[in-house]
Structure formats: structure tokens, C-alpha cells
Amino acid sequence: MNYERRALIIGIFINIFSAICGIVFFVITNSKSLLLDGLISTILVISTIFSLYISKKLENKESHQYPLGNWPIENLFLLFRSILMILTILLSLVSAIATIILYIINNEIVEVDASLLPMLIYGILMVGSCLLITITYSYFNKKIKNGSEIIKIEIKSSIYDGLVTLFTVSGLLLFNNLSSIEWLSKTGDSIIVIILSIIYIISPIKEIYNQTKVLTDKRRDEMAEMKIYDSLSSKFPQFTIFDVYYSFSHLEGAIYICLFPNSLMDSDKIDQEFIAIRDYLYKEYHDPKVILLLSKTKLHRL
Image 1 (cartoon, helix red, strand yellow):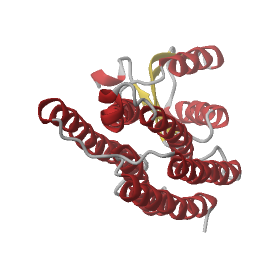
Image 2: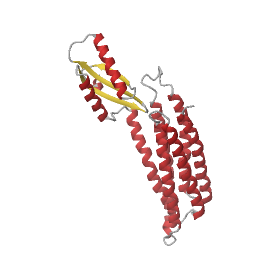
Image 3: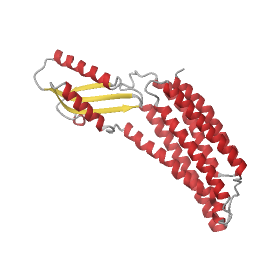
Image 4: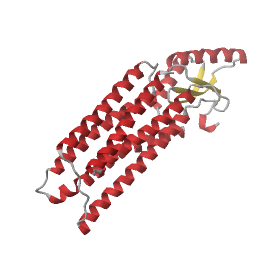
């Protein structure tokens, strides 16, 4: 079993604990903000289980069905996870807004027990589990050559989740002690859910944007392409470089180059030069796929 899968299996159990904490403390306190925290942990459990499957599938890099590599499977998964998180957040947001509206119209409210002891216990358990995940994932990620994109994302999610938990607990304790401002004390939990929803939704929206660029093969690193163009033009002046496209997904890179010799070359000479170009790029860019095209036009015009 590789290091990535070991980390993810440990992460599943820690996230299960976090999800149970969120749901149990929701039952104890009636706090929807704690429920949202638990639901996010539940999504992380589900997504990590899928991550295990994807991690195993990605080990088989060579496949007739995926001639350029099967890394986009991971990008599809990240896109799906982001959509699932957004739907969960939106449902919580609608529920919180509805609660506030009902209080304003009919003075209806669900009492929340945000006393010090349950909030303190919840905060310690949840922040502690986030810290444990971060330490575990960081430890295993250092053992993986070039790191794991999935684990890096999980580390960011864990740190983010821990900070949001601190905000949630602090906010609930603050609103619970605002007895002088009845409206805020009665609807404080719903207000926190709305704030949490806004905070939580930023990350999956960014992820959807990034993964859409990856899956549609939009140029994402024109600085790297310019660097490749300049280095090849300098090192191989016998060719004119017409286009460079650097496509990458996960740890897999593919460099497409449209080029043409400046003088007459036979096929054997071109083959030799192409081998030299590939060898140079392999050393510089961690063994990418290199696709060299004899062309006097841009890639998108072929």
C-alpha cells in the first residue's frame, strides 16, 4: 500500500469521528452551525473514500483508453466534490435564512444551548481532529515524490475546517451572551450559519473554476510556456518554434510544441534532433509527455 492511500485511510477514520461529533453536538445543542460543520466532515469522509479508489486507479498510468494519461479522473472527482459541498452549503444557508424570517414574522425560534461546557468540549474535539489530520497528511506527503495533489488539498481543507470551527464556537458563545440584544441572541446560530456558508462556499467555487480550466485544457501557465519557448529557441536555434502548450493534470505534464527546421533536414536528422529536444525537456520538467509536431502554425490551427 502506498503512502497516499495510508494517509487517506487514516483520514477517513478521523473525519468519521469529526462528522459524529458535529451530529452528536447538534442533537445536544440544537445548533445548525454545528450540524453544518458535521455535514462538511461527512462530505470529506465520502470524498476521501472516493480518493482511495482514484489513487489506486491512477497507479496504472499507461492505458490504451487514456493515451495522454488518466489523471483527468482525479479532476472530475474534485469537481464533483466541490459541487456536493456547494449543494450542502446552499441547503444550510436557505434553512438559516428561513429561520430568521420565521422569527421576524411569527417570533418563532428554536432554542440553542450554546453554554460554555458543550462548546468548549466540541471545540477541543473538532480542532484536535483537524490538527491530527494535518499532521498525519503532512507526514505522509513528505514521503511521496513531488507530493500528492489529493493530500495537499485535504491538508488545506483540514486547516480551513479547524479555523472555521474556532470561529463557530467563538461566535456561538458570543451570541449566547448577548442577552441585551434579544434579536441577535435568538438568531445568533442562524447568523453564524449564514456567515459559515459564505466562508465555506468560497473554496469549492474556486476549485470548480480551477478544475474547469484543467478539464477544458485552457492555457494555465503561459509563463512556463514562454520559458520553454525561450530555452528551446536558444538551445536549438536550428528550429523555429511556432507554439508551445504546457498541459498538466495532477503530477502528469504534457508539452506540445509546433516547430519547423530553418534549413533542409532529412528524416533521420529530424529524429535525432527530436530525441535531443525530448531528453532536454524530460530533465527540466520531471519526465513529461513531449509531443513534437512539424508545423509552421499554432497548435489550435492544426
